[in-house]
Amino acid sequence: MSNKNWPGFLAAGIGTAAAGIGLALHHKKQKEASEEAVIFGLICPMEEETTPFREAMDITETTRLSGLTFYKGTLDGQTVVLSQCGVGKVNAAVCAEILCEHFQISYLINIGVAGTTHEGIKQGDIVIGNDAVQHDMDVTCRGYRPGEVPDMFVSYFLADDDLIALAEQAAKNCELDGAAVHTGRIASGDQFICGGEQADKIKETFDPYAVEMEGAAVAQTAWVNQIPFVIIRAISDNADKDAPTSSYDDFLPLAVIHSFSLVRRMLLLAGGEEAPKA
Ligand code: ADE
Image (cartoon, rainbow, N blue to C red):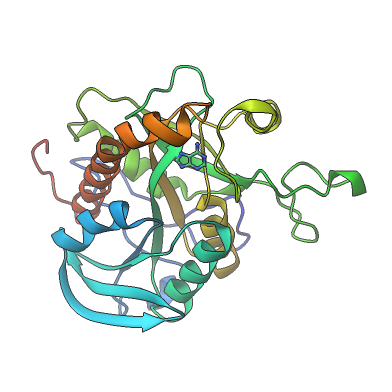
């Protein structure tokens, strides 16, 4: 897999993508890949986002670690480990680290809903995160760039090109009630964004396609573990004054279905399956 962030990371790519995408699923320890099963780690923050996956999975193993439940099994022909991490960056990082270290996953996908401050993106649309930044990481008064994690020399954690391509391909094969699919930046922080100065500042500084509360923490954890990742978020609200109430609540169910459908299509395509539209 390729990732500009990761020196020495072995390229594998999704190949020619001739018929379907047929992801050539090599992972970081490419020399061992033939002996190791490919495992997708799936992280959802909330119960509403996790339940559709858990119900669709064939679960073979349930493990409790650090207060979290991990469901291992199969979904659409792939081995997956699913967990509900809870809300916020610390919860997300704890969960992602367990998936990387304990479950030895090959790929990490963070799935859920998000707000948007970006023109042209509507509720129900999907954002495939091509990079992720912590909008509340701010050491600018000491000369660091916005979002830069001191001593890590990085503000924007790059998602894996091949997983992005897989998601984009999946979007073409997925019925999403007319919703659009965009590829762009995700900004994460331990704040629910509902307009005002904070929304303006995030837009001005990072111009993200989606704002949420976990993605960049998953991204940073994946990055330190050299695990390819991507973030898939469906838009539930416009991160404005209506976001905390009606807007979010009204669109949450639709947004959950859209991100669920897209990720299932990704798993099918990863197995080389050219399934009809969902
Ligand atoms: N998740 C969904 N909507 C959000 C918002 N407006 N801010 C942060 N996280 C969100």
